[in-house]
Structures are given as structure tokens and as C-alpha cells.
Image (cartoon, rainbow, N blue to C red):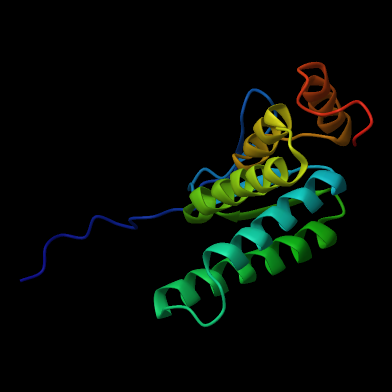
Length: 157
């Protein structure tokens, strides 16, 4: 027995902007990233390195699926960023936890290698992963805050 039709269940909802001007996908499936080329390079490098560490080639089937998903996402992210001409791209919201863990790992490894932490820079990149727009000048300000806190030697970066 078939029940009454309730019409279309889903409808396309246009993207909205937050008070800060960041674009939010109203359906919640994507996180839109608006960042400078310098920040994008850190973002992509961190997630790519995390993918290699967390999901090495030749691992279990589920790890290989996660690896391919992240690598495909990074390829799409870079292609979309380049094609946008406006320093914008995005990724599936379901990958947010792995993206953010990739950023944390990147800075943990950097701290272990160099002997200093970059807490302000990490905080900025974690915001980028959430869809908050940032520029190279804001990245430099975060680095200056890390230097002022004694996290980065004055001669570095």
C-alpha cells in the first residue's frame, strides 16, 4: 500500500553567507575554503603528508579507500582552486576531521623537527579548514604572534 505523496523531499537551497562574509553551503555537504596561495600550499601539503602517514600504500582495504578519497579530494581541491581564479575551493564536510588531523600532524612533526611550536599558525589553518577566509598577511601575523610568544626563533620563517 502506498501512502500519500508529500512532494519533493529535497530542494536546492542556495549558498548563504555568514556575518563575516564566508560562503556556507546551506545543504552542509561542502566546506568552502577561501585562502591565499601560500595558505593553500600549507593546507594541501599537510593533508597529503597526513594521507601518506595515516594511510600508507599497501594497507588494509578500508585504509586504501580513505587514502584514495583524500588524494582525490586534494586533486579536485587544487584543480578547483586554480580554475576559480578567486583563490577558492572546497571539500566534502565528511573529510573535515581528517583534514584537521592532517594539519595538527603537520605542525606536530614540524615542532619535533625544528624544536618550536606554531600554535597561532595552526589555529589559523584549522579555521581555514572550517571555511574561514584568511590571507597571507594574516598568516604572517600568526607567525609574528608565534615569534612574540617565543615559539619561533626570530631568524626563522
